[in-house]
Amino acid sequence: MDVYAFYAFAAIAVLASLFVVVQSNPMHSVMLLITSFGALAGLYVLLDAPFTAVTQIIIYAGAIMVLFLFVVMLLNVPREEPAPPAISALLGPTGMRMGVVISLLLGVEIVWGLSRVGMASFPLGPSATTVSSVALIGSGLFTRHAFAFEATSILILVAMVGAVVLARRER
Amino acid sequence: MVPLNYYLILSGILFAVGTAGVFLRRNLITVLLSVEIMLNAVNLTFVAVGRYLGTVDGQIITFFVMTVAAAEAAVGLALVISLFRHRETLNPDAFTALKW
Image (tube, rainbow over all chains, first blue to last red; front, top):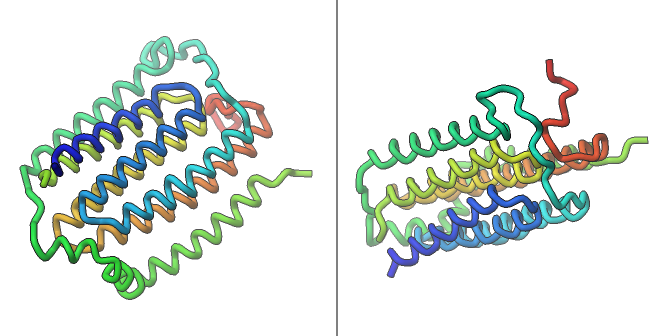
């Protein structure tokens, strides 16, 4: 049962991410990315991380993607421009050949390296309840990682002010 | 339960897909979306390895990654809006003022 759920969520995540990259309407890209994030939330549930699954849905699929949708609608640029003429042979007729080669290479490298980790299976039993405990996440966040937490709040403040300043209309 | 390295390979594939998007697309919004895919691939690795080691630290780091992603999206989209205001395009090849 777990295995089928993993394959289903993994297939949805990979296919939706591929379509985000492949098709040309940014509106559809945002919608497909929300689908992909939903599938990732399902994977987090399978990994006994319900808190992370819920934050994934609320913060990513909710807040961040709404921000993207808002900008896509605001700018109203439905289609990508056609590719410019080739600058050099390596960049190819559409300027895409190098990018395809590099990202394929990266994918092969990562998958090869990770498949050498070996078939490590997850520990069962009491550690599963340890990982899924929201209370432990909260106490870890506010004790051991308190400095990082405060630094994050400053980061968010700076990002908020920066976004307002950058997007302001100049007079 | 599915072994750990299934999750690792899945996140590797997602990361490569995101990289391909950054390299291939000529739309600044889609490039930012591809960066989000890459961040999510890394999040999946953190949660899977955290589950494997039996600690909650992976999920805590995921929480920080999400906040940084939110900040990145806010500033990045503000930059996209102000760039669009200057050039009326989202093509990254159009912004060559700093190119030698």
